[in-house]
Length: 538
Ligand code: NAD
Figure 1 (cartoon, rainbow, N blue to C red):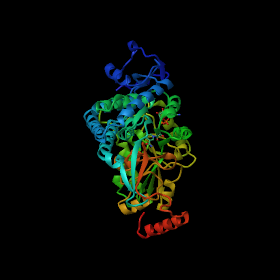
Figure 2 (figure 1 turned 45 degrees about the vertical axis):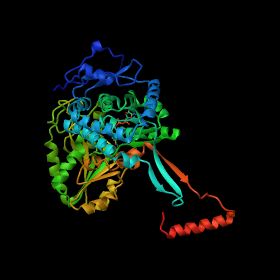
Figure 3 (figure 1 turned 45 degrees about the horizontal axis):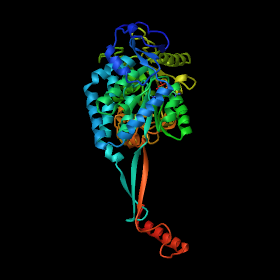
Figure 4 (figure 1 turned 30 degrees about the vertical axis):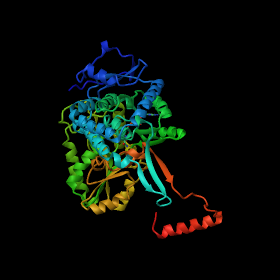
């Protein structure tokens, strides 16, 4: 593995000259790159380079889209959506099930690309096709349950027939981040397609190839090509033209950007779901299985080098088990195999970019300068890869330190001791975020009771994060500044539909009949209301 420095230079590097395409050690086949980049809707002649964080070598030059290209993407998507909305739920579900198989069959290719673009460990990359397969299967198998027209009881039993249709919104704009570049680009789109929508996707600039592979696999699974448009470019430039034309926006990324997007959606009165940041806590109670908690804590803190929205950055550990837990947590962390390679051997890979490395380094240096203690890690490791940072456990973190309340989004966790569980819950609830939490206790009932007091959208008991995230029937998302709306479950698909109520009235009118006065009509209706309540009707 090379440990050379990253290729410097601006991201947008002008027209791409294939003659001078310097592919290095982790080079992709030119054919493969062309097949993927050809999927971007772009007429600008401009490209932006993608470099691998593994060794800084260039991977591809991604064509860049303009606002006009975004408009064209919507035109194509709208035309495709009109035809798609007329297809049967069976046909749409079948395409999802084919995607399920393709993703499992082609996992090596998917994992290579994810790793090349993100530098994450292979076992963490595997979570991505896994999540897509789970999502595809769940929605394919539950399509009718969510989308079929439902009969409801009408106001006059027997005479008012009510049905609710689920009408697709139209074209959904999906803006996704780089940290799980394959699944974050795809997973929210699967229920959108199943519900009869088209998608215009703008993945993050750093990980376009993984997202483009997802688009190709959708096509291979039988989804019409124009149904899933991909545009590329800086979020600040393409965000407004995307939101201007969308019927709904699904955004995953930082809280700061989420607020900007929510404002723009509000201007147009379109709905949006926002999956944002977190400062997620773990509580290790006095009756926890310490070994299990330490295993979970390692995964919770260092999966994808901590660049995971639901990863843990704060840990509250009961006095009674603190020393035993810390000994096991530190030992397990020190035993991790670090390395930015495509093999299955590494337990943790590199951060994705220089910007990420700067943030993580700044948070740790600030904490140490103000008195925090590094129990393990704490250093950048350019010998492993240009942006590598060691898994780091801090003690003695206090409110004046940056990493106390701000999301680091890196492999850094602060551990605090607690004496009183109510106090631990209050500290876990401190701050503005509310994405994910974990509780370790051998008393499931007690932990579940405690979960109700935690202000987070997901709470995992005796698990780091995977139990909720991989249970696709359960809604996933954030409270407070961690987001709005939910992915997964019925919430994750109904957000892409408009409920349309259709009532058919027989015989009785909603006005006086047979010469009845308005006053008599009011009396009859009053009697009727009292009777309905007595009969126990809703
Ligand atoms: P970011 O908000 O900067 O970027 C995310 C996406 O938004 C990218 O595609 C980017 O190009 C685009 N974007 C940026 N500015 C935009 C604008 N003004 N208008 C429209 N689009 C814009 O996020 P990031 O810092 O690159 O990603 C990491 C963050 O994402 C972390 O805070 C993390 O917690 C969060 N995240 C949350 C989840 C979740 O499910 N809750 C999942 C992954 C990441």
